[in-house]
Image (cartoon, rainbow, N blue to C red; front, side):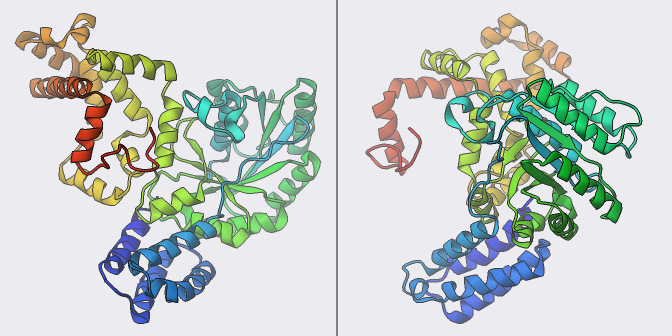
Length: 472
């Protein structure tokens, strides 16, 4: 989402870092470009003015001028203010009330309310996934009984859509009663959730193509009746400044407690995320990062700021891995690697793991220097579809061939290529890739832990081991 903004800011700060000393004029010139970059990214003008006004005095202060690396100091100041603009800290969903806790979903039509309702319900009902169960707390650390109810009686098939999403996610939905009005549905949902012992009730309200008095009156009446613990405004990150105006309008009429940004994985310019917290005073709590039900993440201001400034988001990368990797599978694979027994089935599971984590481009976006990495991928013509093709090639092998790739000779390669819709050279590339990985694993096993550390030391790592703060 922040690619355009990241590139502009990256260019500005690269010039600052390249200078041994900074004058007030240098800082002013850089901040003018930062201002332009923020405005081009659809950040609201009052927010931009406040941001520049707060950054400038610190950026030209004595601490920066006397610093050994003044350019880096300016980047740090901008980073700190970006984090502050985005909310400072993570804002968790507040579910600490007597059940059923009501979550009211509001927003314009097409913003993604219904899908976001299903994503939140799915994550709450599933609890933490994979290795994440041992690592993370917060909203999704506990499994909860969730029910969803659609109050959208205006949009054709809206209630049926939520029912289908409920079936797909395994989350119960309130049975549909034809011609029942939103307030009556709300009463029935509250009674059903209480009677049947649900922990959380998610109410999906109707939207409009634009803000109107009738919509706001209806939502206000529902809110007064349901007394929700959380009122989440769902906004499409692609709408830019309009999303900020919508947030302001809803916030003036309702007790909005947080914002859910959808389509963050698209090519939005990022201004909505940067502006909404500052304009409404309400935190962005969750972001939708894909179409799948588990593609929902807490909003981390510090990590988003790091991504914007091209410093990567390693913590989110580790968390995403932990959510999709089962500890038992990881231990089994580690044991096999130690014995030098990495076969094609293991490679297949790793390819699938990579796709689950967002593919190569998804992972690149979280690494430091993401823009440079993506540019290198583009220059090298690395195709994301290659992962699918490699998976198809492995699936075209027999179980015996997967366990022992040395069996795969010319005639078998032709059969595998034909079965997977690939070329023989694609099969050869994959077999070579597997052979190279196996060689590397055997070499690492021969080195042992101490030998590996010495080897890394020769490549610039500290001789005592991994750098400080590196996960061991």
